[in-house]
Length: 86
Image (tube, rainbow, N blue to C red; front, side, top):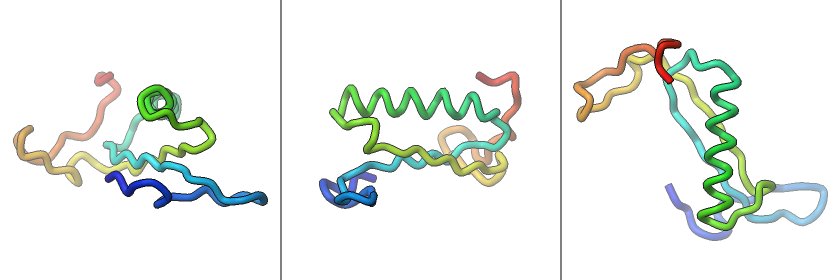
């Protein structure tokens, strides 16, 4: 969801400044290194495409069991994630 300029702020000891938050709902089980790699790729894309600074970005992951995610185009409830998936 794009909230528009000035909708999300990072508060510091100095003046607050505009920031962005990427929220990723994923199936649980992926190791931290895999999630970090995805976060770094998403941040790089936001820097390159949107012109944001790294300091403006956060990535949050919410992990779910497969049957907590329903995708009509994929036939319904998801399977649990397995290490065989990349």
